[in-house]
Amino acid sequence: MIKNIIFDLCGVLIDWNPRYLYRKILKDEKDIDFFLNHILTKDFENRCNMGEEPRKVILDLIKIHPEYKEAITAYDTRWQEMIGGKNSETYEILNELKGMSYKIYGLTNFPLCKFKEMDKQYTYAIPYENNLISANLKVCKPDPMIYKMMIRRFNINPRESLFIDNTLSHVDAAIKEGIRGIHYTNPEKLRDALHILKIL
Image 1: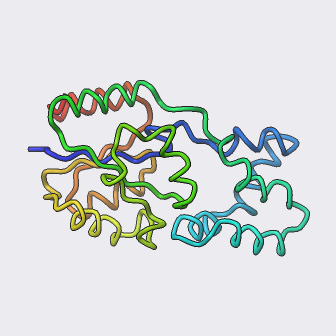
Image 2: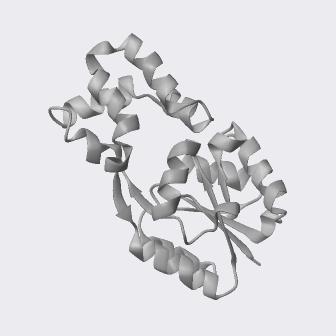
């Protein structure tokens, strides 16, 4: 029986997409693809998400790719332009679950300084103390350790827990730790999956 439901933040509760910002800076989608795949790589993102100060990581990257200084700097100075707002329908589902007495938690890969700024505006549905932020833990999804830390921190039974994330590898990693998982694609499919599991 599911008692605990853990939500990812960006891509699930928050409409977050770097393209929203970089369409204003780079020439076209081809340039954006190159930038996101070869400049602003997963390694860069992980360094920020695991607790390094984003400005330091950015300076390191500018030294390697000075021709992209404006675009790289914008990741720090204009990061809010990557946010399209909150996913209202997903928030409605979350609030329904809260009303049914499920315990609600958050698990997100995010730089701490940026999370604190965004928390004021978007994540009021989940109290700060019920959120685990990768930068605080110095580890990020899909590392198995982050799920183990979550289980210990919140003192939850993995068999009584459900994890919702828009990245399939993150969901698969949670399942390997005994947590049920839903790969989020949109609110309608999330609602359908919760009905199938007899949670809603």
